[in-house]
Length: 114
Image 1 (spheres, rainbow, N blue to C red):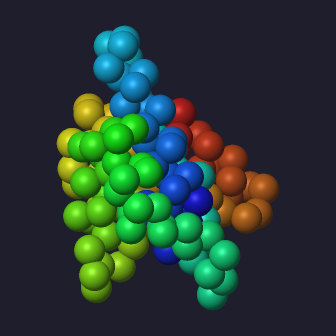
Image 2 (image 1 turned 180 degrees about the vertical axis):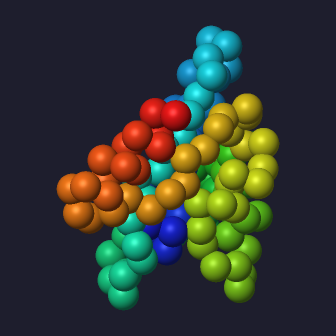
């Protein structure tokens, strides 16, 4: 996951699944982003679905509209945008960047468990 790709079609699907599970069971949800640093690539910017409401909005209108509003023109995509909403209910978030090296990654994983 990269901040630069926040709100793409895969996020819409993932967040929709989280919302569907939350609607059926009172589970405590932790979203651990597995966040990696942004890069200069553009291959993951799959947001054209936001221009196709007739096709995509019906699956989860509140989520669709929420993501579209969050990504309005000029806003820099980042996972923190959804963390500042109630779109994922009472989910908690773990937003630290995942280190590449093994030892720092172990520290990251220990912080996640806490």
